[in-house]
Each structure stands twice: as C-alpha cells, then as structure tokens.
Amino acid sequence: MQASKSATLNPCKGTCKSFTRRKILRAKRYVSGFVRCKRCVIWMDHTTCHFSGGSPATPGSSGWYCNCCNTKVRMNPRLNISKRLLRESQELAGKRVAY
Image 1: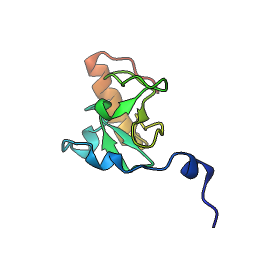
Image 2: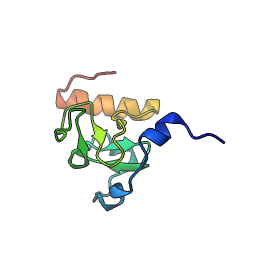
Image 3: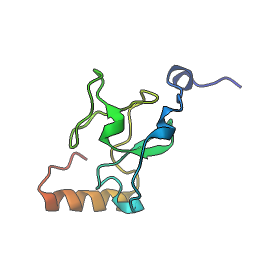
Image 4: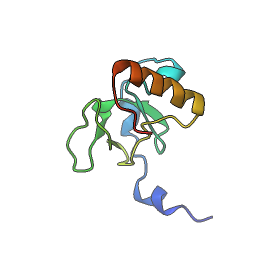
C-alpha cells in the first residue's frame, strides 16, 4: 500500500509528546483557545504553534501550524452543536464569527 503524499512530506517528529496540556472539557476546547493537530492527534494551544513564516503564534489570531509536523491545525469544530456553542460564546465576548 502506498503512503499518502502529505504523510511523507509532514511526518510527526514526536516532539509534540512533550507539549504540556491542561485538561479542558470537550465542548469548551475551541472556546478556550485550543486547536487540534490532525497529524499528531493532540490538542495544543498557541505556545506550540507558529505562523507560516515561522514566527510564534499569538492568541486570537488564525493560520496556525503545528511546531512538530508543520501541518495546519484545526481551529474550528466539525460538529454543528459544537459550532453553535463556539459561535454563541464568541458573540457574547463580542468577537466576529468567521464561519
């Protein structure tokens, strides 16, 4: 079986295993500022991400990449109920909703 092109270009290097993470309720992860790396299969915050130019990621910004595998991380939930919870919390905080 042939490996996918993206898997060979951006393999997980294993440095993500040392990233420290706080325990957050499942529905509140995106609201709390956490993002999901699909390649490393972990939740992380801005301290373990960077922008495409290599500069460190800042809270509240978008376009983050994983420091371990250089894959773009997921910043929004996939489930509709989770999207609704995130949208409501952002509206209460006065932030503009992107989706």
